[in-house]
Amino acid sequence: MNALMNVSVKWNGKKFDNLQINTSEPPLIFKSVLFSLTGVEPARQKILVKGGTLKDDGPWPDVKPNSTLMMMGTPGELPQEPKEKVVFMEDLTHEELAVQLKLPMGLVNLGNTCYLNSVLQCFRGIAQLSKVL
Image 1: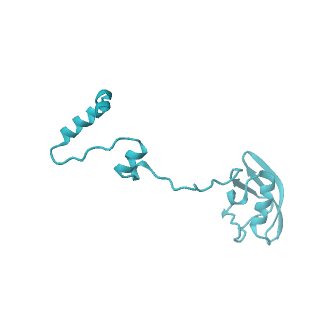
Image 2: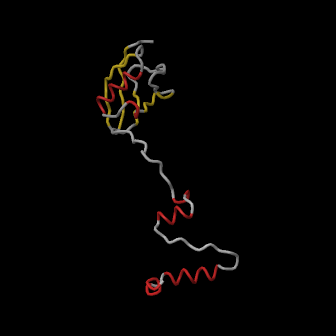
Image 3: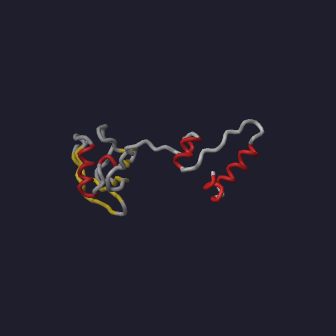
């Protein structure tokens, strides 16, 4: 197999013709050339070759001279992992949820006291009664 050959690469509606590849070098070097042309970092590139995809350090797939390769990827930085762990409302206990939402703590239901508890909580919402108590 010939070590040096010319290929074309299609990406984002553009076509880059007469790009020279050396199959005796790792494919990451070719990806670096594409990075200089497109601004897509090698880690974000996916190059489709007939018969598979191009790996950074793997062997070259069967590439024919003057063939056309497809590249997928977007330029820009990779998203960073959040510094703090994301906590969802569903994961919080009732007490933690009340603190986060700034809700007053409810009353504990002791059997058949649910109606009494709800009436007392309604009274707490009346401004005149809250000032007196």
